[in-house]
Image (tube, rainbow over all chains, first blue to last red; front, side):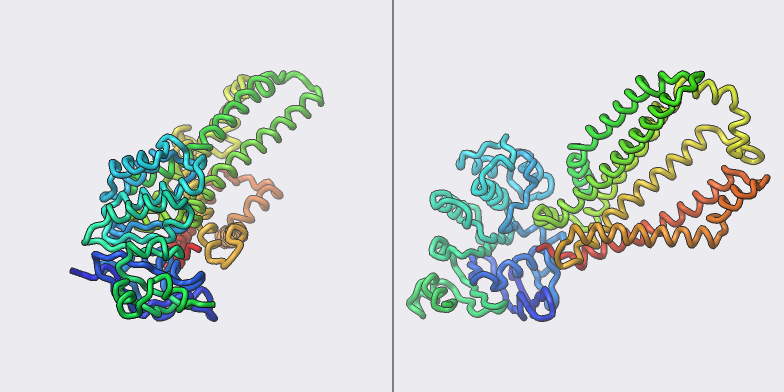
Length: 233
Length: 276
């Protein structure tokens, strides 16, 4: 089976002086939850945007299931950006219809079930919902797809701790061994227990690519502790 | 996918544009009922002339605002849906950039055409009063002669003229929409102040196309002909013939410019867009 994600010399410059991502080489297999970790401005979001074809690489290439980003890769990637990307004038149920219209692998039933669990009114317009509730709606939409690669940029940053638990269990419940989940977050302690692998990114370069078990057994530390050590200011 | 995209684009534009057009249509009906329809042709009052001029200025302002509003809203939809936060969803739908662009061009052009049809209808309502109608009926031959419907143009039917006008108007709508989208796309190439960049780009594109049009018209000797004719009252000048020549050149220019700008937008969307 193809690796779900491959990067070869992936570089992104926003100007001539600064590379947000610098010669990144990486291969990720399916069946794992991967934490993409690094301080602010390390290149995490740039990397995620390149995977999702919302940025064009300056050099190198990224491949998803052996394909360069395009229509076919968008069918198998479910992406949660760090911002509200929905038309706020739409009702929640209209957004469900929108996703059903465009994604063949979207399960409206699953989405409605999760909305009910979180007591979110499907007749409410998005602009009337709180920031946290909007984030929950977005995560529900993303996790209601049967994707091969879930890319979640700060999925739990804006929600309360109670909802965090629900979101993390949602991520675990909806993911299967043929898929992979790439999660970018600062809240390492909260997600450490669900991660299989971590990638540390520093100044646009990969400084660590290891399984959580390797970190615990070989270094005798939690991921959170190692992160604090590697990125100490 | 294209049909679905058009449906959502139309739905978004339909939020404001029907209301705007109904408002203008009602304004035209009111102006006809209370102003132009009540004008007494025998009256020589300067006060009535003044009111009439005032209402025509008002009507012209409303119609200009309607057109500007229509194209502006289509441009805003394109900008918001493709290049702001919403772009993160739009760009990650399993749809090719070319399909996105086509959908938005079709939706914008549909509303551009509705806008022009609405303006024609409103102008008809405001201007074509029973008095004007009787004047036209009484002096039909003279008016047709004056406009140049003579010789090979004598048999042109009203429906043919209307069809040509509609075709030209539709092409104009598509061309205007593409020009606005091109400005928005060019604005995205600026590292900051992208909306301002889009506005500057719009004026730059408008200026360049206007200068090009003038130059090509002059090359074919059409731009100066009307002025020369007006000055010397050239006896063989035919308004319709002149307009047909101008429309032919304009159509070719609009088509060429639109294809070039459309290709440029596609290139920018496909190769240069960085959502930040």
